[in-house]
Image (tube, rainbow, N blue to C red; front, side):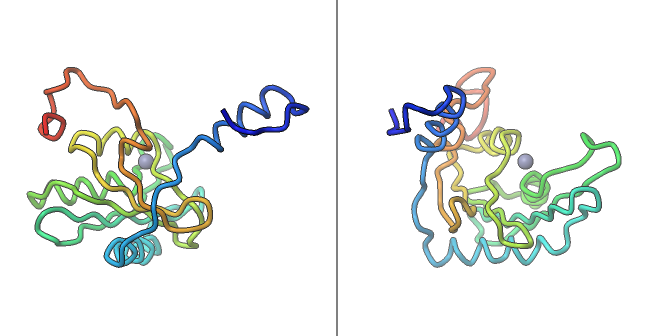
Amino acid sequence: MAHTDDRLRPEVRAAADRVAAAPAGRAPEPGERLLWQEARAAARRAYAPYSGFKVGAALIGASGRTHLGVNVENQSYPAGMCAERVALGAAVTAGERPSAVAVATADGRDAVPCGLCLQAFSEFGDVTIVCRHGGEVRVFALRELLTTPFAVSPDAAEGRAR
Ligand code: ZN
């Protein structure tokens, strides 16, 4: 698949091949870059006293309004919440369905949404994901990052039937 050096140990070669095979996304449109900048500005308000990894998310739907989220950590680690799902909750509470979500760290380093967040967004169809990857802001279709979301049935979710 990839052109990795055959002298590498098998596990190192496998990891390098996974990186080489990973989707690269596309360059952002001006509005998508602006959404990422809103996510980065929000990240400064994250509550991350344990990891110091401050993340913000900015989500838009059909209304064009922006819904923000930040990660909220907890002493009981699993009780913490990712910024993306906090933004999703804010949007759904406002009666919105997501069409695009940007995620950014406060310091601007690479950060792709975790699998749990991708699964959460998959409920609403092939949402556009804007994030920094490979040292630059890139845009992905959710299905590029999560090729086979969990589904009870293909028609169970409102977004999946479309
Ligand atoms: Zn997450």
